[in-house]
Image 1 (cartoon, rainbow, N blue to C red):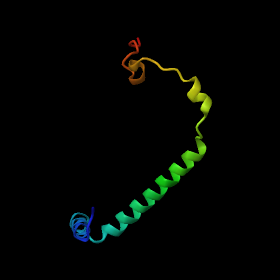
Image 2: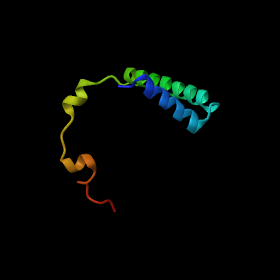
Image 3: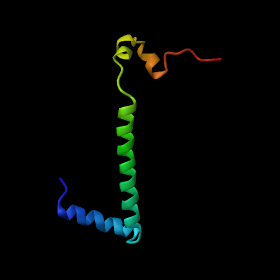
Image 4: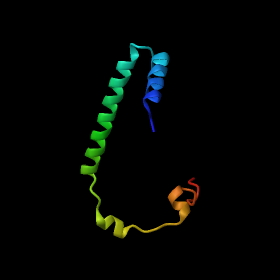
Length: 75
């Protein structure tokens, strides 16, 4: 669990490594990236609804087929 002392140490290391001027930019870009990621997850979940017929018709192959090791070499 993170305590106040851990957060202060992390902030001090951030200032040391990135500088005081870069930290707001890094925080802003991290926040924007997280927002875009969450939007992408929400959009992907809406776009790709699970189809029960696909799960019922899927056949199981050999373990090598799933990893690509069971296929013969292509010439």
